[in-house]
Image (cartoon, rainbow, N blue to C red; front, side, top):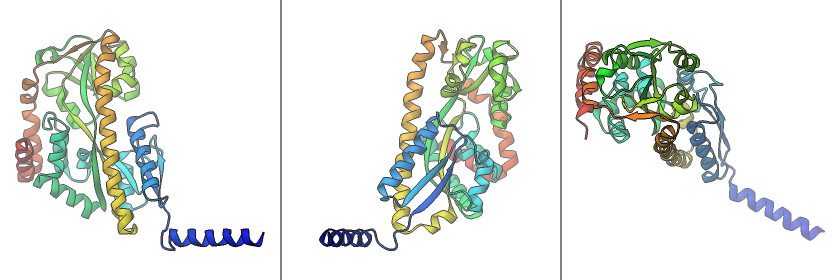
Length: 328
């Protein structure tokens, strides 16, 4: 018995020595607006599991989905204050702090996700915006994921921009969505997301615009049998960390965090791309007619909105728009 206890004691001491007196466990909070059935949550869960595994249990991430900690703006403020450790946001959402960031959500400026990544990380405009976010808000951008592209459904086919004329289009109360509707000839009709299905069903509105995943989740295909691939706004999702949190972590855990955040972003992107590819076939199986209108006239129609953006942001906005639209 004494021998067993002695061996057990030696094992315990060896285990403690191997773990190290300084290998502290860090519990981190991550807030999400999306609920537990979303791709965003699946990716965040993947991220949390990998962090725990790769850090040997030193990095534990507790997830708070479904806007438990507030909306996206509130959580950005919490990240800035250091009371929230990790979170999501679109790069364009930072326009509430830096108006020039709206550039990333101007319809048809961002062509695809590869373009979005280059516009964010490789341009002078993007690098300067990141520096502002870091220095002024105490928030660091760790990685960027694809989060879907907004498309348009309607109670009639949209084969060209002419078919948008007079269309009562439900949009959220966001400048880019409102201007997309207005400048293509539609009549923008803001309303709460929860009211959209009934409005479409009763023809109170003629159409709406959302990523394919939202169109399926809300079953809009039941009451709208026409889907136009208008590709007007690409949604990204940034993986963010409070600068205060990053400073608390030792260098080795910072490196693990950076690596696993990129892995999670790649997985996040994969989920959305695979879902979108499958959803077109799903919608067809539900009797939805899919059209591919020429998008050149749609993009040209946005020029008045671009002009307003440049007017509001001066040389910074003008140079940024030129730089990002020229990125290959």
